[in-house]
Image 1 (tube, protein in one colour):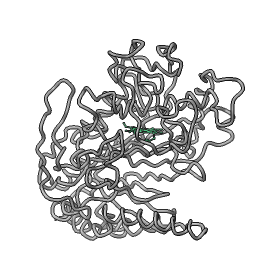
Image 2 (cartoon, helix red, strand yellow; image 1 turned 135 degrees about the vertical axis):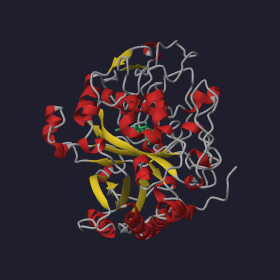
Image 3 (cartoon, protein in one colour; image 1 turned 120 degrees about the horizontal axis):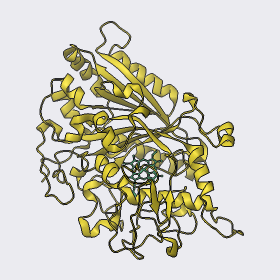
Length: 487
Ligand code: HEM
């Protein structure tokens, strides 16, 4: 049961609501050796800057109403200046602060560097900074680079960065920004992103009646709440967890620095384009577009292929009311990215998906593909042109959420289990976007919408998403920050 009513003023805003943003900075730092006490003092001055869920909700409400009003008056809606601030700590950060309670999450405790091989990462691709000790990350969001910089400068001044008595040492900083024009909200392969999120019970109003996806209990995302029941490894009884009292209403943040090879992905789609009629009606996809949609499970607009399998339909972009046919991949391949990461009805008979749900808050980074890269069908080796996704997600248990999703679903060619498939399926294959075949070939079946060809394998010769680093963090409640982290 829930310990006390949830107070959205006490939960950091990125978790349950998201910080409105065009620009985002991830400022990774260490607490200087021997400086834990003065750091705590600085943290006390920093806490009032943190955007709470209530504030983030108010901001979004204000934008929605402003847009409606502007539309009524036939006026363009002006960009609202805004900045959001959140903070999260790694296990090493907890140790640096002398917080030794067992938080009850082994994946968090070992850190992402130690977990990297389990996730399928090649450590030689990791940026050297993510092999260093990182104690915490401050997330800053804004609607312009100038507001972002100003907020970052203010934060740095609180921790006296640049002065002899500073309490922190920057490790690295990553900057994300939404893509320009019509690509706003789309990741670099061109697909609308951040659409399907679990609705959280009694937090996200008005979603309970949606068919298909049910709201998740608060404890799936927040520690210590109803639904934060323990670690679930298939075939084993639920392993219960005990949380320290200060962990209540915090959430684990998995951060992934993912480079995307866009020209390579596009040329793979061209080379393996699915057969489509030579004469196409307006709105009909090319064979490459159809293949792209079959790999992701949604068209570029976001429309789920399970609802509109033949052609994109932007009117369906935000629809979540789809349920896969567990016996069939005619409408959507079993291994398609959205089916691998949220198999929905595929798991109805296996306990459902609730415990595996995560809330994603990623942002694109890096410039658009250049004409030279397009021509060469190859990403430039110039680091300045590197692009991809700064992927973040929140959950109450990393072993149930991100870690499990990557290791046991995306990388596992046998998932989802397909004993009842018609026709019988050899193995669904790995997630074509993020999957790494560990000891299995990089391939999937079901890319063809023609059911008689459902078992044809498609081999991925290369990877298009290269993990460059990351870390696991804990994003504490405001009261825990005041009474435990800064005390
Ligand atoms: C959904 C792209 C990495 C988990 C999606 C969607 C796209 C996408 C286009 C569909 C739109 C939406 O519902 O938001 C990408 C790209 C990635 C990436 C390009 C890497 C560069 C990841 C990672 C994970 C993940 C690392 C977790 C291990 C999910 C989940 C969904 C999703 C849970 C929602 C599925 C659903 O509920 O329908 N992703 N993603 N993604 N992705 Fe990813």
